Image 1 (tube, rainbow, N blue to C red):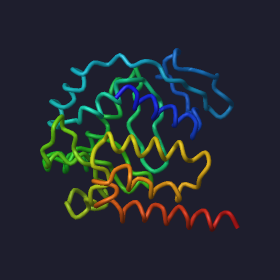
Image 2 (cartoon, rainbow, N blue to C red):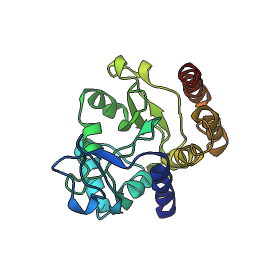
Image 3 (cartoon, one colour):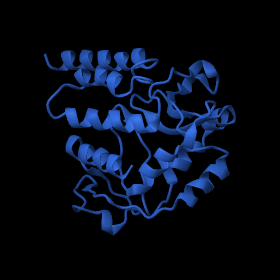
Image 4 (spheres, rainbow, N blue to C red):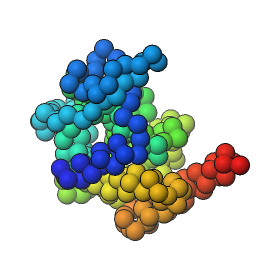
Length: 226
């Protein structure tokens, strides 16, 4: 997972800005450039020091299970942003250990989903709702498939999407490919590649979901490029 984590963040820094809004909670060792007039500053990765046991405490506190691949990815580095535009993953600030993971589990919708073995861990890029691990399906190392939950359904299972990725590891592989390809291709041209990278998830039950994303991106491109 170390190699996959490195590739993910390498692609991230090449595709997106490494700037975010400064807060007093930012550790000095993560500051790459000073805060500008608008409050933005450049940040850098530092090696993670969180232990697996700390994630296990979160699992116990919220009565959830986390995939081994997710824990290994998240604890590999400390990082202040992981918004890939199509999906937003939880950050890791050493001064606020596991804060975003806990925030994703500690709100009204999460309280409705967790008893159903649906565990929120990130957010869909259009703010439709949380990304969830589907813990209803038993898997080795808790490598659950991933769905999106539409928060407007208030906890009703009608708001649950089809599986959009077969595992968190496949999610990382697809996002890394997406960010890497953004250098030379349009976003809507890249998304169908997910079908080959994750044929058991994105390329099976997730096809309609990802095609809707690609179609929306294409429509936006055509509208604003005129």
